[in-house]
Length: 177
Image (cartoon, rainbow, N blue to C red; front, side, top):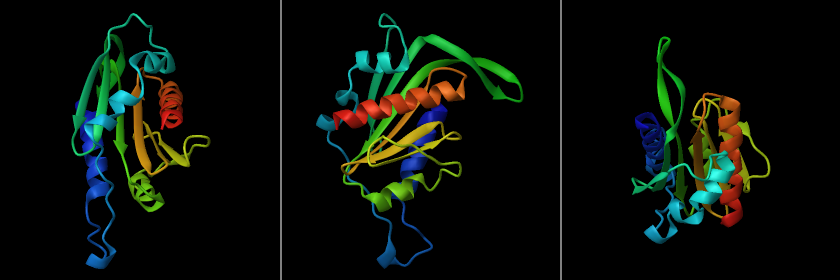
């Protein structure tokens, strides 16, 4: 969980920072913040998310809403765990989790700035106007109608399964925008 929070903060900081290699007239644009009424926690129901992630309906979900620096919603399923390599073959159980980050007033240029950290970016079709998956980051980022959304689902040790589920939630989120 700490790694995913750190990743989200770092990614959003990159988008929000000035590009020191350019003159002040070429500063990077920054998206607006969402209001509490437009939280990513409010757009999809927990039931919809559980269906998309193949999580049984009776499994308890904890949901945390934050706005640092953009509205973020964290979901966690403590009773669902999977083996995770911490360091050099040391394994631990990791709790299934998902995060959604939502920024508004974002254009194509800002989207491209956001995904510039994806050295392994893979274009994903049929999600918003444009979407990119990063296996290393384990998340999909998409743009739709001026909304930039990051979805990261980590519900198993299987990277392909996490990708499929992240894309499924991203499509569901895009349909609701």
